[in-house]
Image (cartoon, rainbow, N blue to C red):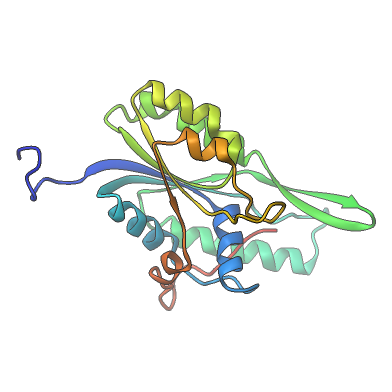
Length: 212
């Protein structure tokens, strides 16, 4: 097909989903209650909006914290998390990367943080030129400025990063804007509540889950 031909197939892309970010945003749009949505449909929809066909979806999360010995509540969370991943793994194009959940005690309260997620995403981004030499555009769903060096390096390889993110103009909020992150990418799109609502969770599908 000739360039510009309306029948031309969309270019292939890779999608990178930072679950910590998208879950927090779904909870924000749901006014404290996470919106239930299908991750795969969510990824497909945003890819289609960019006239891209996704080849792989990379998904990053961490299993829930487990004490030694684990508590009943922790076991229930882990079972739900494992079932959630099993449903995602039915899609052969869905690649799951897992970090770990760290528990810290600060001022008498337990604080949970995901570890290694940023490193895993950065590694996968840097492997694109080698593992997927045909890919020239990728979609990154996050708000983390730690990926700026990787984004700039991909640009040196002729790979354009389309950022799906969200920010608020008010400073010191959960969704502050990183000007450097916005400037580093080829294009950015602000996510809205509609992106989540356009990917409804069908009965028997993935449960809305986050580990922390």
